[in-house]
Amino acid sequence: MDNTPTPAANAGEMRSFSHFLAEHEDGELNNELTETLRQIIGELSNYALDHGGKPKAILGVVFQISLDNGVLEVTGTIKKQMPQPPRGRAVYWATPNNGLTRRNPRQGELPFLRDVTGQNGTAIKSV
Image 1: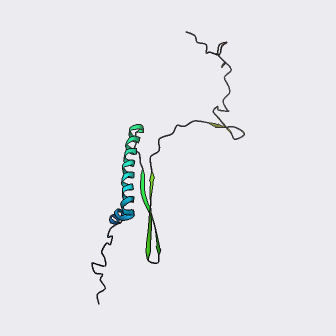
Image 2 (image 1 turned 90 degrees about the horizontal axis):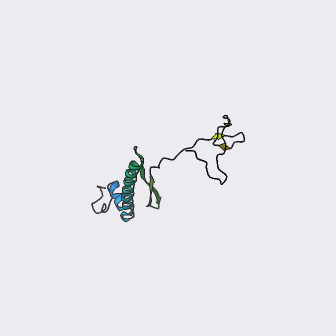
Image 3 (image 1 turned 120 degrees about the vertical axis):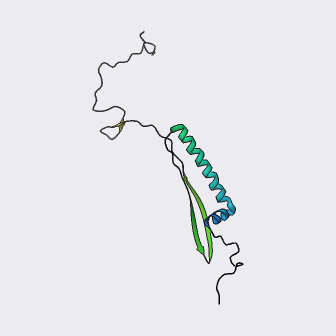
């Protein structure tokens, strides 16, 4: 006896991952992934114009699959990571009580620094 399934038994079978992805959530996940990809391309282009370099992003999809009495339940989640703009930096020194200071504690104050504001609080300028 031949146990090969008949074509009718395989009707509607998804034979590829791309077919599964297109069908999942009635195509909504596939549409959202397409839109997210467009968003990433735009973000990368803008980043390159603003900051130069070779920006990178991550786009992924995670499927949680559970089996309950012969029924597979699949939930998809989109994961993305966009390029982050460069941040400024500042230099600090640690104080003896573990605080921060903008002044180097090993460098003394210069004695000739003085306040040069006038009587009304405006800066004095010489020409």
